[in-house]
Image (cartoon, rainbow, N blue to C red; front, top):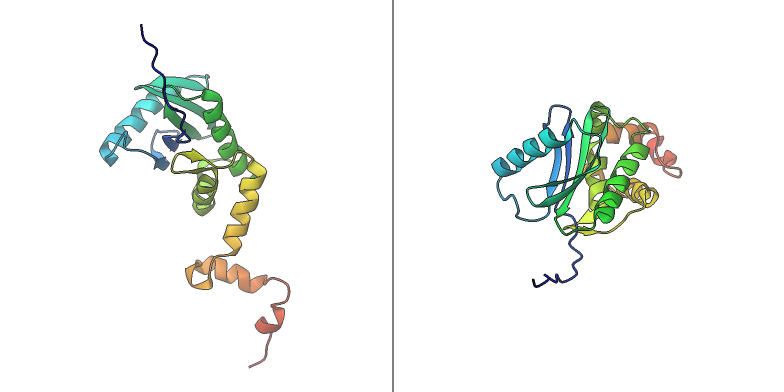
Amino acid sequence: MEALILEPSLYTVKAILILDNDGDRLFAKYYDDTYPSVKEQKAFEKNIFNKTHRTDSEIALLEGLTVVYKSSIDLYFYVIGSSYENELMLMTVLNCLFDSLSQMLRKNVEKRALLENMEGLFLAVDEIVDGGVILESDPQQVVHRVALRGEDVPLTEQTVSQVYLFSLHPPSGLEFFWNFPN
C-alpha cells in the first residue's frame, strides 16, 4: 500500500468556535470552505456540540476533522483542524485563546463577560490565527497586543462608553485640553 505524503502547510486551523451551554454559536470563524454556507456551519456546530458536551476528553475526530475542545462554566471552546493535523498544535491555539480570554476577563470566563467584551475576543483571535495560520501562542503577548490595539482606535470609531471613559480618565498630558476654560 502506498503511503500518502502530504506537503507541509502553515494553514493549520480550519475553524475556531465558541458555543454556549445550549450549543448556540457565540463566536465562529471558519478559515476555509469546508462548510461554505451558514446552514452547513450551524449543522456542524450542533453535531460537534452533541458529540462533545457530555465527555471529559479534550480531542475528537469528527467528520474527517480533528477537534480539540475545552469547557468553562457555560462556554465551550473549539479549535478545528484537518484529520492529519498535529493535535498538539491545535491544543496550543486553544490554550492560548482560553488563557488570553481568562486574563482579559480577569479569570471570569463565562458567557455574560464574554458577550460584554466581544471586541477583545475578535482582536485576540486575529492575533492568534490569521487565515488559518498560527501567528502567536503566548497568551501574554496576545493580551499585550490586544491592549495596544484597543488604545489606537480613532475617536470616530469608538463607542459612546469608550469616549465617556476616556473623558473621565484621559491619558497623561491631555488633562490640559480637557480642563481648558471656554
